[in-house]
Image 1: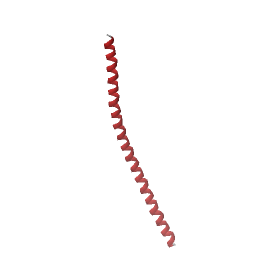
Image 2 (image 1 turned 60 degrees about the vertical axis):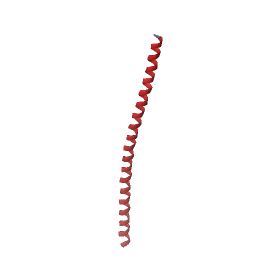
Image 3 (image 1 turned 135 degrees about the vertical axis):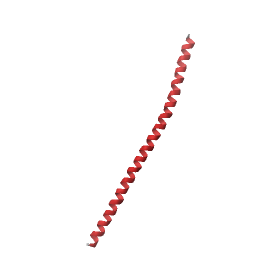
Image 4 (image 1 turned 90 degrees about the vertical axis):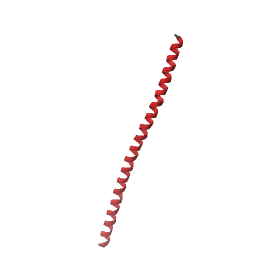
Length: 70
């Protein structure tokens, strides 16, 4: 009986460790996918803000040209 209890506890610990390993791998995959999404969103925001900066720079240059002509 003592051996069965010992084996049961040992097997439970082994199963728990295997389950944790599988869940860690799943979590790593999930986090990597989330990082990709966040990186894409960030890049899109940077591109959008870069376009706004270029547009404002162009508007400023146009304004300077018009002010120089007057």
